[in-house]
Image 1 (cartoon, rainbow, N blue to C red):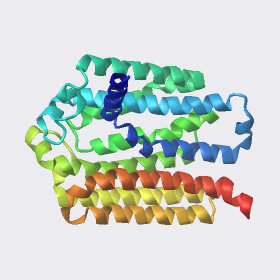
Image 2 (cartoon, one colour):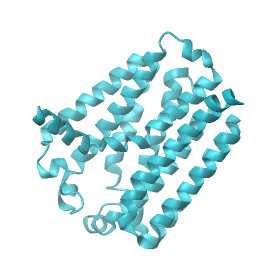
Image 3 (tube, helix red, strand yellow):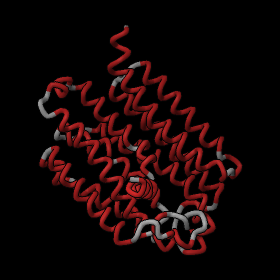
Image 4 (cartoon, rainbow, N blue to C red):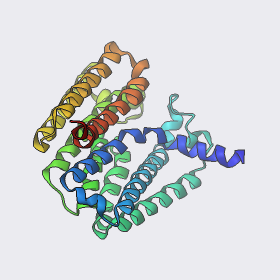
Length: 298
């Protein structure tokens, strides 16, 4: 019994399953808005199927993407002291097992997308191409962070299409906000490997511009993200509680950059996971309260 559990733990570590907290709340944001605009969605006979399909797609796509990234980066990971103990370089998970894992979860993703509705299924190659393609971008462009941002940013419009079967400006604005939010914290995370990336010829904003300028670019991206979230709130006509929520989010953005200020790279793991997970969760909870919970008390 212990061996299967240990193997499962190895795979969960390989795909950084806990980091799903960054993306899942933004799927929830799109769903909350759709339910607000059309409460009858809750009464649809296939609502639970929609909900299950969205969760399955999210978990499957992210699992496949992380596994694929570990496969294509395995030689760089082995050479980097910070990542040498990852599952593939260390031999904990074999290359063939990792490939099977990725193919399996890609198949699950596509099947779940078609299960939700045919349109979602036919559009499923788009997130696959963008998300898997990100793993190669660091080899030729320092804008790789924005590609990762786009990969996560596709979550709100994907949910919108899955549930409503159409697209509007609002989920596209959510996509833009999530893209800049993700790119900003990915720049901070990449700062840990600045010298390694330069030595092996990998591209990143920290490797291209240096630590100080990279931190300013990350701040600019997070400012753009915040302004986009404000714009979508104004467009959607959210209430005072979501305005308060965005003020908290702005504070978290500032806190994150204060935390890693003056080149405190040792604090980046805290800023990367704890603060960023808090930002996405706060946005989702704040919107949920603003749209459905608070009106019932007032």
